[in-house]
Amino acid sequence: MYLIVAVLASLAMGIVIGILLRKYITEHKIEGAKRDAENILKAAKEEANAKKREIILEARERAHQIKIDTDREVKEKRQEIQRLEKRLLQREETLDRRLAGLERRESILEEKEHHIEKLLRETAEIKEKELKELESIAKMSQEEAKELLLVKIEDEVNKEAGALIRKIEENAKREGEMRAKEILATAIQRCAVEHTSEITVSVVPLPNDEMKGRIIGREGRNIRIFEQLTGVDLIVDDTPEAVVLSSFDPVRREVARRALEKLIGDGRIHPARIEELVEKAKAEINKESMLAGEEALMEMGIEGVHEEIIKHLGNLKYRRSYGQNVLQHSIEVAYIAGMLANELSVDVQLAKRAGLLHDIGKSISLNTEGTHALLGAEIAKRYGEKPEVVHAIAAHHGEVEVQSLLDIIIQVSDAVSASRPGARRESLETYIRRLEKLEEVANSFSGVSKAYAIQAGRELRIIVDSDIVDDDSSYKLARDIAKKIEETLSYPGQVKVVVIRETRSIEYAK
Image (tube, rainbow, N blue to C red; front, top):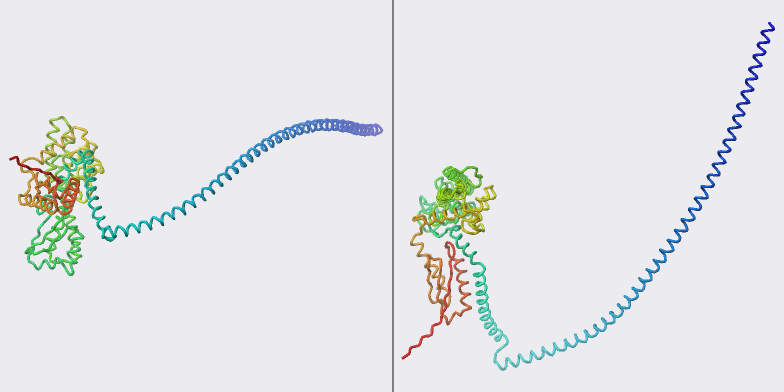
């Protein structure tokens, strides 16, 4: 029992000694840690102080450098300001000097202005005095003198105008000879209106003369709406049982003829019915044009042509040039071009295509500006024809320069088709009437002694009285006659007006 107590007492003593020993070790470690912390803190403070001193020194150096740079910049700015001030002072002095000079000039100008006004007043007084003296000497009022002067000036202006016209025409002849040939070559092909009574007019028979009143309608409303819808002049005159349709566009004239015949056959003539039948006639013509174009293409074995070109080609069925049907002429040109191309080793199909389409520009309204060759080339280009075909169409009358053998083939084929015997004709009555009208126009001018229409009406030679018309006035006379021909007559191509003035001196030796 005592042994157990002794053991327990020893154990308790060990535990207490352990605890005390542990406490001592712990306190010793804490003291060491405090000393280490104090050392670290002391070292950190010393390092911070050193860094602080370095930063302060660096900041002082930078501040010193900034001050030096600022002082230098301020010095430079002051010097610049001083230079600017000096320049401003110089400019002010210059402006002052100029202002003083301007003031002196202004005073001088005012003096001159007063002097000029005084001179103008004196001049007006002298002029008025001289006019009165002239009127008294000439025994003529100022108005009469003005009239006489105007007459004299008019004569001088006419002479100067004649001289100017002569100069302009000489320049035009010198610079535009080739252009004139092109226009002359294409005008006949484009317009082709030499048969005024045969080509521009269609006669529609009537069952009786009472039908004329129904065609005209109340207050002319029927004939007015008919002309508006068709673009054709409907002439109702004293011709028994017939009316006349007049238009330079054969397609419009054919539409009007068919519509009018249907109206006459139907008997119901009023604006609504007119509009209906005109639209039907247009549809028929469009259908027939497409059919005619397709037949021409099929006959020549040509494929891949745009629908619009087919329509233009078919419209040529209703057009004539000097009595020759243009569609038949185009087919003939295509045949000739194909044969020539075969002989010359050129693409036969391309030649036929260009030959068939060479005159499609004639299908456009005559009111459209431009020659039929260039218009046809534009149509072909717009609807995808090959460049060779387009250029051949444009060049077939020489309006553009020939570039290939194909162009020459189309030119030759066109000339052969047009010039063969019986291809084109003109009635003798129409021919004589045109020549007579040309001579009548020339003889209507003062100073014309004789006038002769020659070369089938393509040239008008005029002989003038040399005592009435001088050299300068002859140019003005030629221009006036040409202008009147353009305004009053219908003719193919061009009419060359030649005024001839000569002075003959005759004496006999006895």
